Image (cartoon, rainbow, N blue to C red; front, top):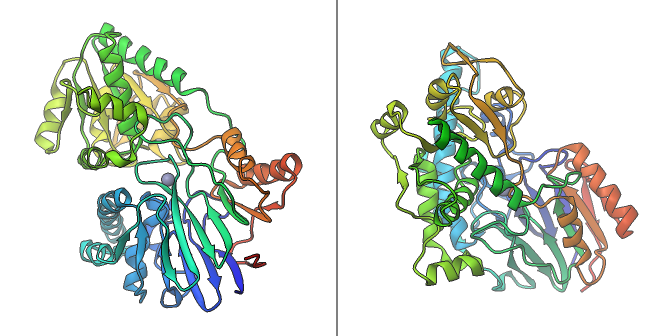
Length: 459
Ligand SMILES: [Zn+2]
């Protein structure tokens, strides 16, 4: 079988994951992600013909891996989307949120009378149309999609439902890490090792970084929660709705149960995080051993008496105007919009409060400005002084660091013939590829955007 692979995104960057494997006359798309950090509407045009694709194999629900799926159907794709059952449920939430963001961008653009690109990328109907084509595939089950072409999902340990697709073309194996989690992320299982593969496509988000241990991150969380409860302030956490919020809920539950701090209310002030948490609760098949045994003993780590969900904006206002010490999760994670902004208006000028960042803050975002020590920021055209304590915890990352990435590749029984290094800023990917060449002595490259690489069949 003639085999080749072409990379249509996530080359020298972390977003826009989309790779095409050509196998004979069949074309399989791995992921169909949104390019982020640019205006939404730049995503409209594909660098390949959607009609030419036969199958879409999705790694996980994050929008930089899935966000263009509705567009693919809009532009003539007629095949299925394969994903795990948990990914299917998260996908609905994330794609509907993408519609909201896109509509908001379109509104802003039309207010500024920007020419072109003022139409939202897609709407709710497009999302529901796309969701109709999903075929759920459980972990470790072989799914045959064409004569002599099959794949199975290994757990990627990144977010609920995340997977590493291992494709088999008549005996020749191509493995894709998707986004690989770090070991020890609570709730979900650690990444499954890849037993064998002939070709490998790997992520490299932290190809040149080592994370502090998760235990240290937990201790820092405890320290800041203690600080606000002693001072009488609020702990405000800009949250990524899927993954990070649930990890932190898990740790807060454990902290309360050990009696390490006084019990204070914890508010999830983000409708999307609430929906995502419900999906987490619906998928025990993804849980790790510790979570399963907690559940068995009658303790659900994602629900505890102090945890309160605020869906309506009335409830959100009540939290903001209250004086009590509390922990508040609100979106968006980089403070680019959403309910977090109103919390920041209230709490940034308050010395007793702590604003705690738990994830990467991209350049140009309000989150980045605050993290970098701005003394004053502008929110809704108001100048807000920054007096609260600003803190950042890096250890809660949902991505493997360079040591874990390398160990993951080292564990493959026979060295892959070719390893393609993607999904990282250029420096991270290039450094990681060089390390694989020098230390593991394997063929490893950061591929060129849209260049086709032929792969020798070994089956
Ligand atoms: Zn991801």
